[in-house]
Amino acid sequence: MQAMTTYFNFMGNTEEAMNFYKTVFGGEITSLSRFSDMPGSEKMPANERNKIMHMSLTTKSGAVLMATDFLESMEQKLVLGNNIHLVINTGSEQELEQLFETLSAGGKVEMPVNKTFWGAYFGMCEDKFGIKWMLNYNYPQNS
Image (tube, rainbow, N blue to C red; front, side, top):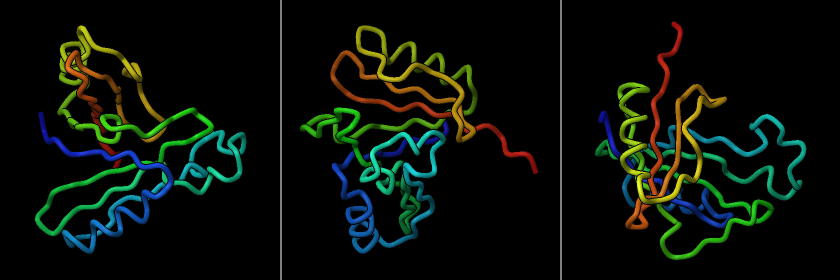
């Protein structure tokens, strides 16, 4: 396992929350993608296209906080327990698959492991204790 980080879910105020955390912990916003940046976003409700698909804050101590906006059109509801995921960045597809299989055993697969449009191998699951996990392997970038 290369690193573990925290992933927050918000109901439309991700940008406000992450900017708040930036004032608290210092650092820089290192990634910001809106749903309008996603392929097929023209089919989304207009009021959701500008919401945050992914945002990262790297604090001055090097910790990484990530977040997204839940979407009402996808019937996502924010309740205690689904507002946070633990993210594991792995060193290989094989490591990701092994961890995913083990963590999801007796739990629930939320998003099967697959290659993504953002250049990663990724999956989401909830373990048998109700903890939500995101597993990610970033493919090497071509120089």
